[in-house]
Image 1: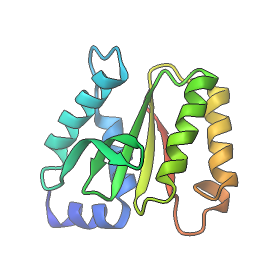
Image 2 (image 1 turned 135 degrees about the vertical axis):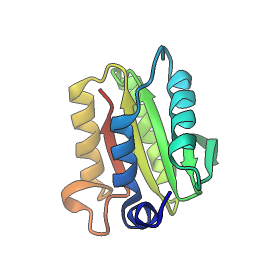
Image 3 (image 1 turned 180 degrees about the horizontal axis):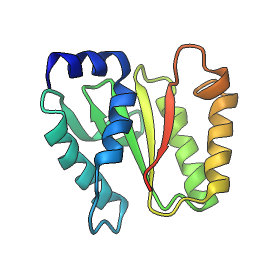
Image 4 (image 1 turned 60 degrees about the horizontal axis):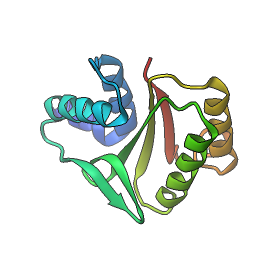
Length: 144
């Protein structure tokens, strides 16, 4: 990673990652763990000078991936049931007090109403969007 890329990372690590997500081509992934392994391998290649940790412990939960102990990626495969929605809200409540940024990466089939409900909740909590004043704490990205 050259100087310009390092500066981009420092200024907008979430933007750098979402750009990388668009380049990432997961193959034969049939579970959340498959996506986690695929993304971890891809990020290790793309972000050579960054520490990437799988199953990063925060409180009573484990985030799927962490980068440099400052940004976590929570992967949700087939985000299409109220049970998965409620479980994610529980995880995000734990991550709220953590000092870093969070990306929720939706893969597989996503229920558009649940995604809308999630982003609405995050906006009301001031974690992203219109009511976020210090940059989004949580970013939702859907990989199609």
